[in-house]
Amino acid sequence: MKAVILAAGFGTRLQRDVSSDASGRFGHLIGVPKPLLPVAQCPLISYWIRALRRSGTADGIYVVTNALHHAAFQQWAEEFPDVQVLCDQTRTNEERLGAVACLQLAVRHFHIRDRVMVIGGDTLFREDFSLRAVEQRVCELQAESEDSCLVLSYRCRDQETQKYGILEVEENLRVRCMKEKPQPSETESRRACPCFYVFSSSSLPLLHAFLEEKKDAPIEARDAPGNFVSWLIPRKLVHVLEVSGRFDVGNLPSYLECDRYFREELQEVQSYMV
Image (cartoon, rainbow, N blue to C red; front, side, top):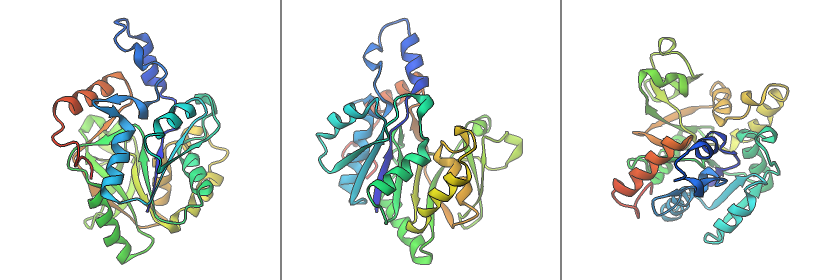
């Protein structure tokens, strides 16, 4: 299995928060891409690389970033010679390709033909998440059907359904559909879907089909990988693995909460996410 970490975003909300903060406490974060933000002892993305290495769940690790931050990621990757960094050649948020196109770029550039674990570069999970548990569940599903894909879900509060893609799931944990930011009254489900997916090798050609179908649509309709997941569900078997929650570093308060947790509450760094 290969791992692709999506790190080509420009972090506009976080940078706006940092730049407008009058205290001056966060000046060192100006211009730092979200995956490279310091979280306790190391950059956020380094937790993923270390967990992937220790778990042995991926035999190839690829990071897709943009031209603005490419040099910073190359410098970071000097610590991890087994990680390959790919630049999508964009320099502004207005030029962005979108996460699905970045995933397709990695699949084509690195000639990926295996199952692909797709990881949001600004996301970390609570301590019950395990890459080995993900691998075990994927193997179980693949034994039933080579077409099977896997997504995660965690329970969100009623008022949070409007923030996320919400999965509606059958009793066997197969996903029936995903509703994008529904009102609480529009779905009984409270299963939020974070940016972590395992796509079967047979689903990879559908990236091109999805992007072709959406080529004239606004960037918002093809940017987030959840849009591809929603489109994929009627076409492939997609199942859920439940986790307790995540840290999504989208703005300054969420970054500070993530950093605080890893400084004060993380129980065991060596086994984290393994």
